[in-house]
Image (cartoon, rainbow, N blue to C red):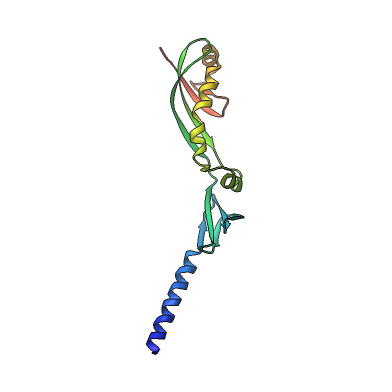
Length: 154
């Protein structure tokens, strides 16, 4: 009987240790952890080691570093009917991790979807000669904070 009680106590202690270890979360210096307990927002925790109770709470890590996206090359016709090829790079970063997680579904994927159209429309409003004259080392900045490199088309 003592052996059975000892075995049960060892099993309970092992389960408690596993649950306690699963509650430990590490957030890096460049991340913030947005914590939800039973679906309710608790807040964003800074870098370091945190205890997040398992089964009732969830933590989403948000990266605060600058993310660069490369827009695939696009053919654009300017106002004076000149075809140019535009390649762009878009930079973005998260300022408020709570608003990014709570207000936007898949906040990290949203800039990838919406970046293609604005650059093409901003180039369509330009004259070819204005683009060529304002180019510095073949680089022109679009109005949407993306850097574009024009090349002459047919």
